Length: 158
Image (cartoon, rainbow, N blue to C red; front, side):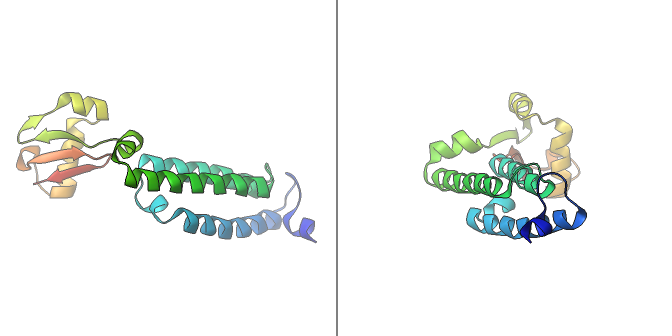
């Protein structure tokens, strides 16, 4: 019965793949609850990595290239590890900077820090776009400061 519903190996029909997707949808929801909404809410580089890896690992049982139980076990380990790292970085400032990075001021009161911009991979056009989007000002000179946050987002202070 179970083999008829979920299939076996890579020779799956559409209904078997749909049944696997149905089950893994709820497994994914459980993993999100274990990992916390921060995994999908904040989008730091660490959060993005876990989302990509989880998607890759959990897709494998749906298409039949990996058994479901080991893939779910691996996903659980990743989610718990992510949660532990999140708790540790929330409690230990130096670990937070090591794992997530630190913000850097790219523009401050008329002065561009070109070295910081180069390290962050951000051009002057990127700064101007951030000023347009966040401060709704026409020129970079119309704001006080632009900072690249540890998440990679640009913050504008006007």
